[in-house]
Image (tube, rainbow, N blue to C red):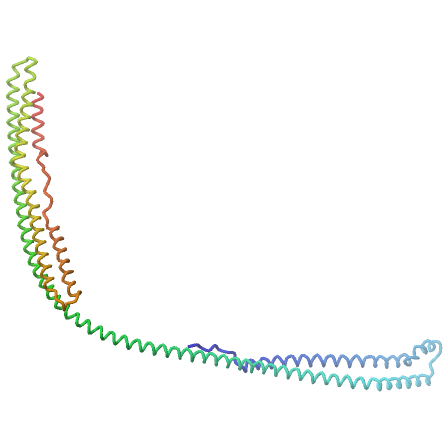
Length: 388
C-alpha cells in the first residue's frame, strides 16, 4: 500500500498571498500620496513667490520696469494700489485657469487609487485561484493513489487466492505421500529386523575370528620367545667357542716362540686364519640350523593363517549374499532390498579394517650379525693376542 505524501495546508497559502497583496497596495498608496503632496507643494511655491515678488517689487510684470524709475523718483501711492489690483486680477485669472487641470489631475489620482485597489483584489483572487488549484491537484493525486492502492489490493487478493489453492493441493499431496511413507515404513521395519539378525550373526562370527586372532598372536609370541632363547644359546656357544679358539691360538703362540726362523714366524698367522675360518663355518651352520629355520617357519605361519582367514571371510560373505537374495520377494521394493546389502557391505568393510588392525606386526629383524659389547671385548683381546 502507498502512503499519501503530506501537502502544505491551503489556508496557509491563501494567507501568504493576501499578505503580499496588502504590502504591495500599501507601498503603492504611500508613493501616490507622496507624489501628490509633492505636486501640491510645487504648485503653491510659485504662487507664493509671485505674491512676495509683487509685494516687495511693487507689482508683477511692470514692477521690474518701475523699480528703476522708483530709484530715480519716489513711488506714488495710487500707482502702488493699481499695481496691487492688477496683480490680484492676474492671480485670479491664473487660479481660474488652473482649476480645470487640477480637477483633471484629482480625477486621475482617484482612478489610479481605484486601479490599485482593483489590482490588489485581482492579486488576492489569483492567490485564491492558486490555492484552489493546489487543492484540486492534491485531491487528484489522492484519487490516483487510492486507485493504485485499490489495484494493488485486488492483485494481492488474487495472489492470496492462488496461494490458497496451491496450499490445498499441497496438503492433498502430502497426505498421499504420508500414506505411502507409512507403507514403506512397515517394509523398512521388517528389513531392519532381518538386518539385526544378520548383524548378530556377523558379531558372533567376529568374536570367533577374534579368538582365532588371539590364539595366533599367542603362538607368535611363543615362537618369538623360543627365538630369543635360541639366540641366547647361540651367543653363549659362540663365546665359549671363541674363548677356546683364543686359548688354542695362545698355546700355539707359546709353542712357536722357541723357533726364531722367518718361516716359523708365519705359522701363528696361518693358525689364526684357520681358526677364524673354522669359527665362521661353525657360525654359519649354527645360524642356518638354529636361527633361520625357525624364522622361516614363523614367517610362513602368518601368511597361511591370513590366507585361511580371507578364504573364510569370502565364504561367509557369499553365504550372506545368498541368504539376502533368497529373502528378496516380488512384494518388496528396491529400497527394502538395498538397505540390507548396504549394511552387509558396511559390516564387511568393518571386518576387513579389524583384521588389518589385529594382523600380527612385522617380525623383528635378524640381529644375529650384531655383535654384543662382550663379543667386542673378546675380539679385541684375541686380536691383541694374535698381534703379539
